Structures are given as C-alpha cells and as structure tokens.
Length: 303
Image 1 (tube, one colour):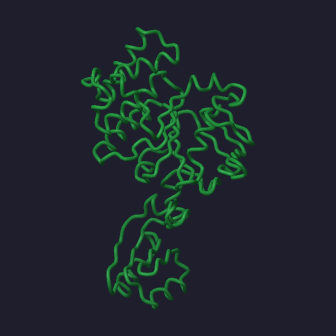
Image 2 (cartoon, helix red, strand yellow; image 1 turned 135 degrees about the vertical axis):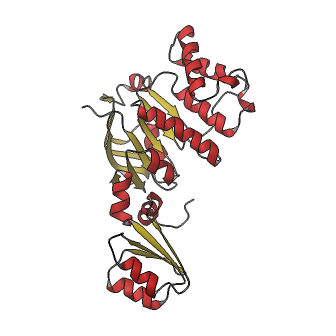
Image 3 (tube, one colour; image 1 turned 90 degrees about the vertical axis):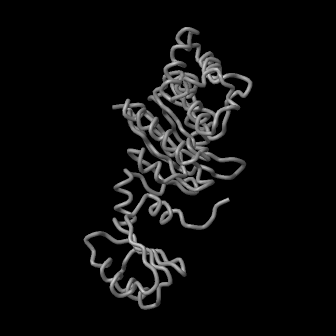
C-alpha cells in the first residue's frame, strides 16, 4: 500500500538557520497523523513543505507517490489545508466563501453549490449560509474554514492547530466533526498544542523538537513507554523521598517544590509513597500524553 506522505531526511534552512533537521516519517492511507512539538519545533515549516508553499532544502518528499518538486500542482489539487489564521473573506457571505474557493479548483458552479450545501449542513452552518463571516462566532469560523478545506474533496486534509483559541464547547464540536471525517477514512495530518486533542484523534503521532523527531508511535504506546501508567505529584517533597526515588531508580521529574513520579499500577511505589511520604499534598492520577510531551521537550517557556 502506497503511503500518502513519504518524507525522507527532510531539511529546511532559512539564511543558515535549520528549521527542519533530517525529518523522516510516513503517513498511511486513512491514518489520522499528529505532528506535535513546542513553538519553533519545525511543525508549521514541515507542513508548508507538504503542501508546496515552501520548497525543500534537502531530502525527499513524496505525496500520493508524487514528487513535491516535480508534481506540486497535481499534489495541491488533492490536498485540503486548514491554516492557523482566519483567512476567510470578510466581504463575502458564508456560502460565497465556499463557492469562490471551489472556483480555484475548477469545480463547476452547480457541483460547487451542491458540495457547499452538504458541507454547511455537515458543519451545522446551513442556517448561516447568507451571513457575513464577520458575524460568525470563533467556533463557527473555524468550522467554515474546515468546510472550505474540504470543498475540493481532498485525499489529504492538513490541519495546522485547527482549534487554537476556541472555547471548550466549540473545540469539542470541531473534534466531533474531525472524528466523523476520520470514520469516513479521510487521511489527516494535524498539528496541535492540545495534547487531549491529539490523544483523542490521532492514530499515530510524532513529537518533534528543534527540527528533529524525538518519538513516533500511537498515543497509548507513547504514554506507556515514557510516562508509565500512573503519575504521583508530591508537593513539598523531603530529602527522604528523593533518596528513596533515587535508590529505586524510579522515573521522575524534580521541579523543586514539586516531585512528579512516573509509575505503573502494578508497582508498589504508589502504596509506599502514599503511606510513608505524603506529608503535605499528593495527587494520584493516570498518565497522559501531556506528561510524555513535557518529559521529552522540557517545561521551560518557549518564545
């Protein structure tokens, strides 16, 4: 089965700065693939190369089995892109934003109107088709941008932080629609800063930092491999606990006033810490993809 995306040793440089550094990954047909990383990790640069906006400096990139340098036009015709920014035309109505965009792909007017109607219904925007986009809420605007990205019935949908800035209700509405597209078998590549979003939607993901891939795998596997199954957060840990953790070679992050211990349900460490070391405040919870992300990329702020 031919991969939808095949990236081999991708490198992207800007004036001597290496934004993407020897990235290799593939995306299978029907896969919902996540590209995660902190700010400046190279995520957006990578997807800009994928849809032909930014040329590859070195390496090989094939989409649908086609070379991105030689066959950029054919590839772009089969891709839908939902960018971070709101690029809707404020002078047009909701429906007109879809119809004008359909024209860029040479879709006949009758077919474009039919597709627009189906997409507006799918994204619960049919009642807003004649409204100006400036009258839409943030969640509605994001759903419209998604609808626009699907007007050409793409074989690959690229989402660059599709729910950034949305309130929880709007974010969950978008998740429901993306899950439905996943069920239809559409291949999706997504970047996001929401680890819950990635854990819910992605079949597989990579975490990148400084332009390099740190890990690759399914979210449950990455959680088990890098953050155990359970997490204990201990406020105000004493030296005795630190010594106990060191003697038993237990995976942990020491944040000074807080100690984060990674363990498993089968381990007796939970009981030992609960009975002997929880002198201040302890929180016992399941490990998450966010724990994996922070363990691998660090906790310092990125600009």
